[in-house]
Length: 318
Image (cartoon, rainbow, N blue to C red):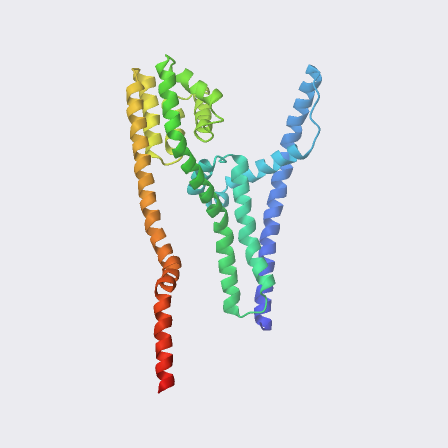
């Protein structure tokens, strides 16, 4: 690389450092204002602890962790933060079960750090290159750093969607059983929330969130909206609508739940048969690539050797 290219690279690094300095200054200002507010809150808490005879918590990592999360959450709500953590990304965080202040802050920080750090690492490791190569390093480093957290979250969300679909028949059977013994919708959901979360790890967590929202004053339809839409599963939407209808209109739901459970299990059998058929087709290609050469050697090897020996003797006689 010539002097001009080195100069341009240094200018780019200086501009990035200047931007980080400005961001850091703004963050320090927010930290100072937040510190003033937290000091007032801490004084009130300490006074209340002295009144009640309690012991105030000592300052430690948890308090600084909470402050950092609050600061990052404030940045997430800015236009720049809403660009890095868009609505689609928040939906992914919902599916991963981490769409809170801490999850959004960590996702925002991961994108910002990787989008800046990967191009710099690439430039430091591959400094001897042309101007085109430098631009490609910056472009691919920025794109990879920006998209890598989303790819990871998509993988985790896909796994949670699969587990939620596997837990759905058990949830329907539990609802049918609890409704059959005479429990109401609230009692059934409370039993599932308190007793079966170790079995229904994904849907039990969503049921807990729905019950918490319902106890906070929301209607049953509003509290079940997240449960119905978070995993983009039409069967979960049907279960959510059924729970809302039973809450509003009442009636026996054992037979509809039984038919619904049978339909889901039949659909799972069809999906399994489809996967087995696709696997069979894939294994045909594997068998052709691996077993066919060995089969040809075993079955036709003797004939090939005989033909080669005969041709060798003919050439020797000639």
